[in-house]
Image 1 (cartoon, rainbow, N blue to C red):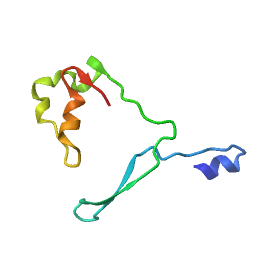
Image 2: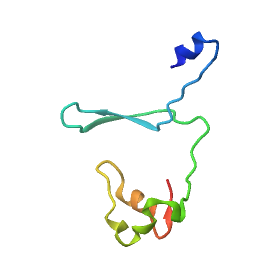
Image 3: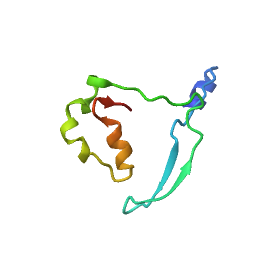
Image 4: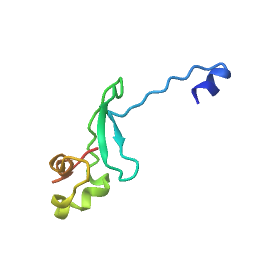
Length: 86
């Protein structure tokens, strides 16, 4: 994409906004290693979506939220008691 714009006289900077990259096992999908990336040069901000969040109606079972590769407490903390941040 960057080459396309460059050939047409425009400069395009591309940023990888991820905080980290996971090296994943091909067959099992298991994360073997994490590589820290520079992320967004402008930084990050939490955004409270309040009742606009899909999770706003899940407070009664938010203690069950988890992911296979996330800190459960951090995930639950962002999706409980009216705090619906991303």
